Length: 458
Image (cartoon, rainbow, N blue to C red; front, side):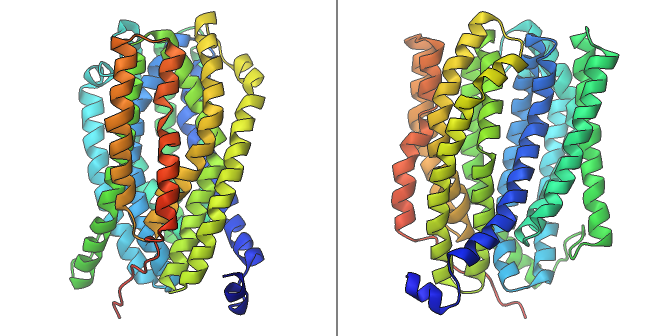
């Protein structure tokens, strides 16, 4: 294989150069996006443990909406990367239009439910009256951000698949800086000792930051972009593209819903154990998500390259790229796990938890250290390489079996029947990635993901 790659004038140095040009800005964008989602929880945690836990639970609704965005983005990215390999920009324009229509419809549904029945939604995750009051208030105000998030996410994902990852990093950086600034004003200047007032103010700060994010995307689209926000054109080409979009998006979307629904269900189980575990889990989740951002960058950036090579018909390059992505995923997964262990003292100094919650957090961070290694490999293969080559159904059945037939029933029994300790319950909940690791590796070695998905429309 190495000899073949050298005959084509392509080797490890060429691949690494292309990968780094994508991974660094994508990892930065993932870091910033994770921080934007988490910054409300972290900053409110500086004034009230209850406010932090409540906003963390309200964030489960935003997380569920984000799953739909992730599925739509993945479907758009699969086709965009391969058509980018053919340099077919008009077709990519059509893909963006399709993705935006679907994302807007879903955003409106989530906005209406979160604005009209916030208490009912928060009640799904906890029966603590104070958490329900704080969480529903945050959710109702934050729901306005849903109306703009989808469009910006679709645009940035398509641009990223055209190997312009720096734009997303710049826009996300601006969004993060503004969000932190607005939050600081609300928490430390306007309402330093009033969590009931700080919570809706922080939600509105997030809404404003998201609106600015969309404005930046629209400005780039109108001035420097090769694709723009446009309504779909109804013709034969669009109908064929819609069929392809649904064919490759629906399994990925189903995978994200199955996976995310299971995570939401585990959050509900944790929420019904006690509020201390909710608070500890909210911090542990933030730390875990921040630790694996580079791994996510490898998965996303590598999938763009795999899709591009497949669209060009370069199967050997795609296979070479996939092999090296797996090596890098394991390596940086270990780095992520070690990072969690190293920053534990910093995490303890940043949040205000009672002794019980802090003891829970200590155990959770140790568990997350091993979790990151398996998570890195699985996200690179199941969410990156496989969908890039059209093998998008594997993740759906894998997560359905592992999460819904193994992890969730076992977690329910541990929490409410056997009533194990909170840390052992968290250990059981975190077993999913370890179970999926050998399954994902076996599927990768079958190379069923080496497929060119493009059509010739000209």
